[in-house]
Image (cartoon, rainbow, N blue to C red):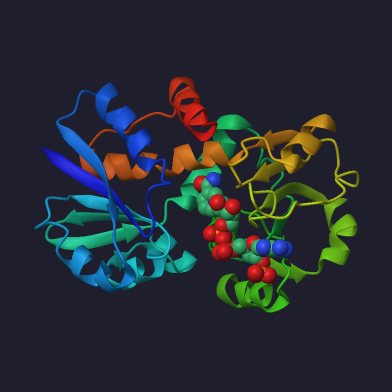
Length: 274
Ligand code: NAP
């Protein structure tokens, strides 16, 4: 039997066991996917003995993603993002990647096939860990101007240092002007998430062809997505990204490339609603 796990602290909120468990059953694999709640002081020991514990790989969640990067051989995406969320053992080495990059892009490709036709200006709200994955994905896709709007200006400035001149730090006050020229708006802040403050922005400057994406998936339909849909704009939600980011890990560990199906989406939606 091949086994993988999600390692976090805490980890009980993770939907990864539900997603991977669905695919294991669907493909009738002799495989298992478990939760591992590991405190920061025990993380190095856990990861360096991953194979001895019976695992071929793991997903990594808060607060271990930076530590996982340091303990593994990262690919270009993990290195650029500065965090690893997927580990796998191959030829005795521990490799890592960051699948949030492809999760974000693959979800847009699946939901709105022509979303990147113009590779126009993009506006990214937030400058945290998920913003780094989104920005790297947009640069890979050829976006030349990514306006990063963040409460803490220095964090947006730091992303320009990390990713180069495509990143243009901006203040919230510049939003109306930036939105008027943007083909894509992405929320990577935790604003709008259940229990957090609301994300309150006026979408009226956006063109009719603009796409609005939100990484927040609890609630599933955020106020931002609701407002965008009410204006007739195309949208992509955080649950789609969450499901698509899981594909690569499953393929690396179990040798089958799984699909994000409406049935899987419905299963996770139901769980989120509990
Ligand atoms: P993070 O690294 O902690 O970054 C949080 C960001 O939100 C920062 O830019 C922060 O600004 C901003 N922020 C927080 N509270 C704010 C407030 N009151 N006003 C203005 N800005 C505020 O978090 P993350 O890992 O990037 O995650 C962000 C969100 O994305 C979470 O809701 C997470 O669940 C979601 N996410 C979803 C997926 C998915 O697959 N759908 C994947 C990853 C993350 P400052 O820099 O000023 O603090």
